[in-house]
Length: 136
Image 1 (tube, rainbow, N blue to C red):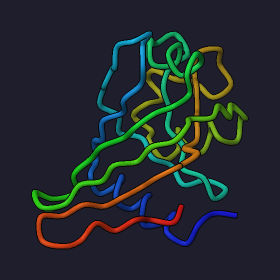
Image 2 (image 1 turned 120 degrees about the vertical axis):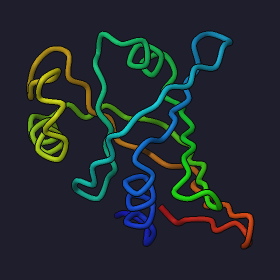
Image 3 (image 1 turned 90 degrees about the vertical axis):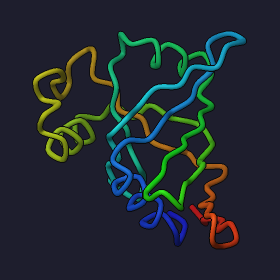
Image 4 (image 1 turned 60 degrees about the vertical axis):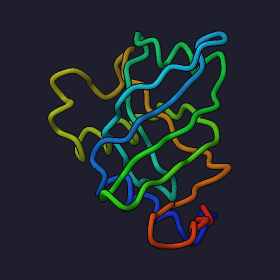
């Protein structure tokens, strides 16, 4: 069962538009921009390509951290694990939500990789308020 703040986390990521996903490549951190955040079956999903370095890094170590700002005064940090879920239903749902990605990805193909956030911690920070820990 999803936590009471799952929708708040999803809305924050959608409002931010772009968030930055950090992974680990051996002993080196890697950060890249992402823009997908699909709320599906009480989970937040992202999409990437299996051929990309990010997928290979997450296969070796599924731990991630996300950082994003939804305004000049507020930002979020989310950490946990990214878990693969490549069911055709997930592929179809995320490609319908982000139709511009259909030029690069096809539901059920060997490259499309959908993963959901298994969140350990999600905190919204602000210059004007105390941190808000989300229950996800």
